[in-house]
Image 1 (spheres, rainbow, N blue to C red):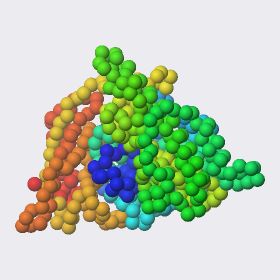
Image 2: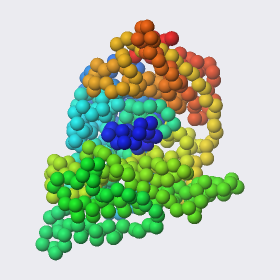
Image 3: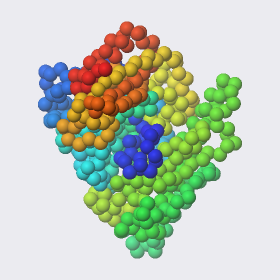
Image 4: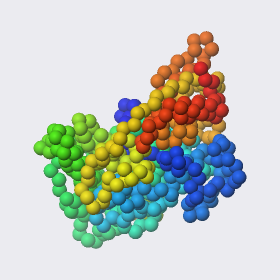
Length: 495
Ligand code: DAH
């Protein structure tokens, strides 16, 4: 999950850049994996995309002027890290799943979804920033790589197979480059609903039934801060068709279920941290006597109301762990289950796995290096990851003038194909040219020329390979290609 640079209140209005971001295939595997084929003789590295692409399982998609998904991103689709035995993401997924007995698991939904599934079905307004091509990978105007597992909520509710379900999957977002963000990452979505009809004539109200289910959730002894009322008319309103007593019960079920998950995860993480410290002869970073602290904060999502985020105190800081809320009734009605009422949540698996194992860099999840992979086992207690080595970083700056038609980087741009300059385009080019060797890209300086009115920007790129020392020569060459592409593809003028 994103460490927010906006105040929390502002962030809450935005489409949550979700809970975590991930790494991409290494440079070597950035060739065309056989499962992905552009049905065209065109060079995929050119910015013109082929008219049709073929993905895993022979699925073909026509592209159009909205297409902005590079081959390196598509090559992540067949990896299925969350299903790879003994992979830390898979172990983390299973640990969470084990806290939801009786729920159905959907772990193989394909990542290509319609704009309708990803946004409209969830009530995202037509001008929502998350729909922009600067933020989302499109194959064509109607088709995207899902930006969150919520894209499958409506379809899963429609199946109406079980009262509770969990979805784990890879999700895709154009975003910053740093050690906790990667354009492909994994989320887990969960929901639990109750059928109003199931209590008819049974002598029990729906609220009473839900409270009885709350009692079945394992009890914990941790301190939970939850100072806000469940329902607040302005900040966190009750939906029109809901009754307050039912929603109090649903919210209690949601909160107790997710507190139980957090206790399981953070107890394991604290134990792993304490064991590692003991082995090193150091004091434990979180003393076991100090109780785990969690808190609920009000939030906003277009598809829930009221909504909350759960935060956990971890090594002195409050950390956002998940988003959740009472499912919008429209979503359930449109999914053909108008008698159901319930809750949903979404969390980022990388962030949780990074905490659990103390994994310092999100790119590591994509590593096929045995020095990484052999450190994890689903049959051993969670142990901290031991970095195999720290290779030196190589820092390079690039300064340029924006094209005169562009005004700002990082701002909102129109959703369509002809948009202006956006910071995410720089991030993407850095990844395209340098692959996983780029650790971090950040804006270090910007100014507007007083006479010409042109805007200058300076980005600092941190290069570091996870498995070897980079030579100055190769980094200079790579950085030169990056600079050249900035000129060719974004039309900037190097200073
Ligand atoms: N889809 C949201 C995201 O990616 C996370 C989320 C929030 C999922 C609230 C939910 C929910 O199901 O109820 O940031």
